[in-house]
Length: 255
Ligand SMILES: [Zn+2]
Image (cartoon, rainbow, N blue to C red; front, side, top):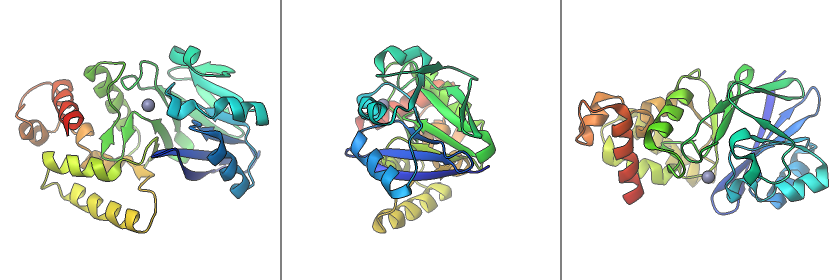
């Protein structure tokens, strides 16, 4: 009972990913930025689309749903708190719900901030989490519908998952994120190592994800707003982590 994954690019810098349960043949697309690359991924893997698990309502995550649903009759699972903004939804889910994919199962974590109803799917037994636009490698999503405090709490919730959890996120932003992170923690050795790793991955035309939670905890400034050195680096020593996070996010928005 092991999940297989297949990652592929969509649109400009979005990622699509298929999760496959070999035992039952069930396959889920995590989000569906557009239909054509999902179809190509299905053809390449030989997997049959049974489900779409949606993280949030943005068009670059949902644009392919209607077409895929029509063609495959797959089940569309979406966050309860923004399902009205998502096409062709069959099932809505919220915090703590368990979504089955054949013999695999994912727990739903509500991670609001980027959007008000954003969710992540955590396949605990497979050490896998699909975090949409909440957490990126060495970055995090923009706080569009929530407050910085809400987003910080969502990141802390993800940070509590086991360190070896492999994280799949919605975009390839890693190198730009690293350039920004190095303005906050230029001497962070884990960040320096991640920068070298990502450069090599990009040079070899490989994706920089999945990443692991342990790697992000060591190098991602947005997960480190409660580290005293990080607070001090943005001139906010002793301030509450949510405020430090807000300052880091604000600096990234301006960068
Ligand atoms: Zn988004």
